[in-house]
Amino acid sequence: MVGNMTPRERVLAAVEHRQPDRMPIDVGGSSFSTIIGTAYERLKGRLGVESDTSYMKRRSRSVILDERVARRLHTDTRPLLVGSPDGWEDIYLRDGSFQDEFRVVWSKAGDGHYAPTGNPLSGATLADLDTFPWPDPRNPGRTRSLRLQAQQLHEETGYAVVLSLPVGFVHLSQYLRGYEQWLMDIILNPEFLDVLMDRVLDWWLELADAVLDEVGPYVDVVAIGDDVAFHDRPMVDLDRYRRLFKPRHKQMIDLVKENTNGAKVLYHCCGAVRSLVADFIDIGVDALNPVQVSSAGMETAALKAEFGDRICFWGAIDTGRVLPMGTVEDVQLEVEARIRDLASSGGYVLAAVHNIQEDVPSENILAMVDAAVNFEG
Figure 1: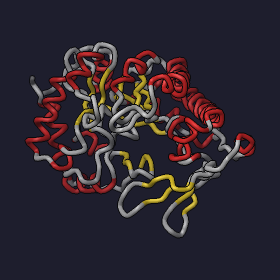
Figure 2: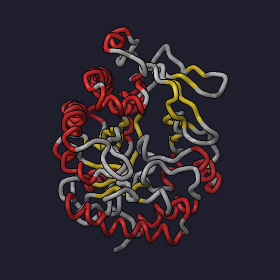
Figure 3: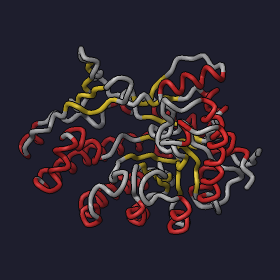
Figure 4: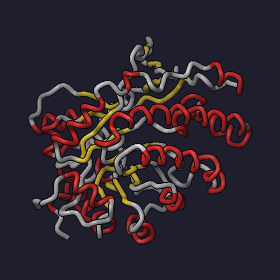
C-alpha cells in the first residue's frame, strides 16, 4: 500500500489516535527497537548492502541501520543518539569485560548480552554517595553536533525523529548497586534507596536538560527506558510503585514535555505492566513499548479495549517465539492479528517486542515489515 502521508505524519497520526494512511513501522528508531549484531549482518548480506556497522550501544550490540536497510524495511523513524563524554573511553579488561563511566563493570557470557557484574555501590553507605565520582551530565561530548544532526533530520527528511535518552533512575541505580542488593534495599534499606535513586534522577535530569536544550525544537518522539515489571507481575506492589517510581518518572516526563516543541514521550517498560498502564497515562506517557505480548495480562485486544483511546501501543510483534521460530506465514499472521487488535482509529506503531535478536531469520524480518505495509484489513 502506498500512502500519502510522510513518515513523520504517519507516526504522529498514530500516536495522536488519528488513522494513518498505512501502518507506521519502527525498526531502528531507538535503542530498544532496532536489530542486534548478527541478525543485522545476515540481513545486510541478504540485501546486498556492504557497509561498516555502527552501534547505538556496544553492550547490547544494538545497531544503527544503514539508510539503504532502513528504507527497505519501510521504517518511518530515524534515531538521534546522545554522544559519548569527552575524556572517557570504556576500560577493557583482560577477560573481555569493560568498565563504563559510572565504574560499572559489564561482562558477557559467550555470545549473549553484557550484564552488569561489577557494581561500584554494592556495599555503599549514605556517606559514600557524597564521595562517589559521578560523571558530568553536561560534558560537552554528549551534545557535540547533536543540534545539527537533529535539525538536518527534521528539516531535510520526512522521518519521525526519535531521541533516545539514557536509561532512567531505576536501571542505573540497579547497575550501581547490584540487582539483588537493590531489590533487598526496597524492604531493608529504603532510606538509602531513596537517596540513591534521587542522586541518579538528578544526574539524568541534568543530562536530559542539556540535550533537550540543543534538540528540543527538532525531535518528534523522546524515548525513555526504565523497567518496573517482571514477566508475570509488576516489580513492586501498586502502593510502592506510586511512591518509589511514579513521581520520579513524572519528573522525567515533565522535563521532556517542557523542553520540546510538543514531542511525544515513548516509554519502554518490559513485562506485565497492564495494572500500571493507567498510571503511565496519568504521568504523561504518550506511547508504550514494547507491549510484551508473552507476559501475563498483555493480551493486545484487551489492552486496546481498556486503554486504546488514551495511549498508543508501540511494538507487540512477538520476539519470543514467532519472529525467531515461526515461518514467514506465522509472521504474517502475527502482524495481521496485532494490527487488527491495536490499530483501529490509530494508536499503534508496529515494531518488534524488544530489539530484533540474533536468532531471527532475515526472511522473518522482511515478512514482518512487508506484511505491515501491505495490510488491507
